Length: 302
Image 1 (spheres, rainbow, N blue to C red):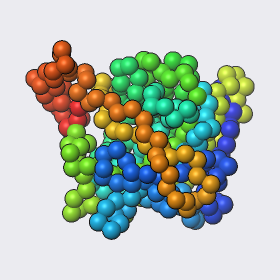
Image 2: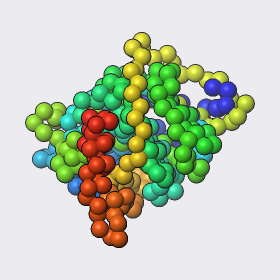
Image 3: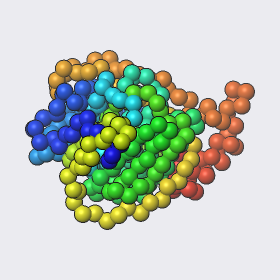
């Protein structure tokens, strides 16, 4: 990668989370009311980072970690990961504005489908854009996002599967990994957990490499060779979406287990804003949009 120079590489062989790199562990109730983030759901064992989503005491908890407040403008983000199946659960691996103010989020991999037969690649620009990639995310794959001025290019196992050029972020962004649980009311994502959902669903990460954008001056570093896998079948569908999810990130915690502080809650976007006319929702337009999404992707969402 001639245009990128390695900032950090973490193979999770140290036995615990490197808090010098992963500055923030998430804590606090999530905005949809379906789960809470807690630092205890993040662990390292046998060279694998485990971000766990788990049923506890009649409710759900999940882990999340990030390089917040550390970030950079432009770069390459490469990781080898898998996300276990589980109806009503999701894994999100993303770029998030380092100032922790909701805007310009880029979801590199978002697995809102419980069977993991595909994922969403989303740029939360204006308009928001999502490309759906037909890859079995429950299997191990190597993902790489190259973020350069005016360009987001996504690769799976070395094959380009997505590219976006509209309203690409140009502010410092951190890198994060989050577990999510969906509420029953989030029907556009398939709804919440049911009787088929395992009591624990894990996001497993083998290694992460983050590189800075240094045109023509890259170090040419390459990650360990992944286990042989079949090339993904790519089915990219581009659509403008409105994401009703609230992002909640706690302040930097001093160690892995800490008392939850009050979460920082970003602005909640109105999921019906795109369909409002003089303050009233045009339900016919909204229904047509949702139907179009279903016909293109097999998923109901706004």
